[in-house]
Image (cartoon, rainbow, N blue to C red; front, side, top):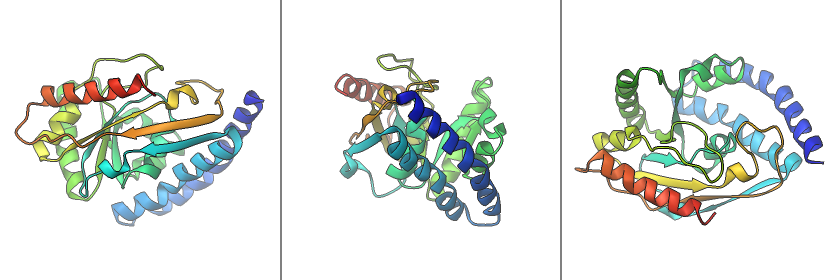
Length: 233
């Protein structure tokens, strides 16, 4: 049954994405935030299809911790689910992502119009400069910035070294960091076709101040909070 549901979801994804990409392209002349609100409708639609077809529900803990002004979100990355769900859960935001994603037909076209911070991860120093410059611009434009500090998706129960770019950006811009933990990988595993029914829990932590602090210290505090929460999810 899970295989059948997963196949139906894949077919729905293929049916919806190309026409929605045309809608996304039509938003090109519009302001950034307006484009975001229209294009992010695709992610919200995918979430509802995943719930209706695959039985993937979700709940959010800690919404009261979200600051009133744009901040940097540092989150665990286990699957594709959270990249969709964050567009429903958080205020308008941009993601730091590898530029190769923008080359994917249809999906990448819409993604490019959402003002992401696309970087070349093979060029570390240039990537950090891009994050700093574009991150500051996006925060000034009213967007939050979402960064996955481990750099890629990890399997449930695993972790990678936390990179300091997101903490450094927040400190440079004087905005807080919001740590986020979740267990989406249990239902929508990394690189897996089969999606399991159940409930994802997204846990938002208290904002971490960054002004006048070292990026490594901030990153260590974020890592300790996220990995501690992962043990209980």
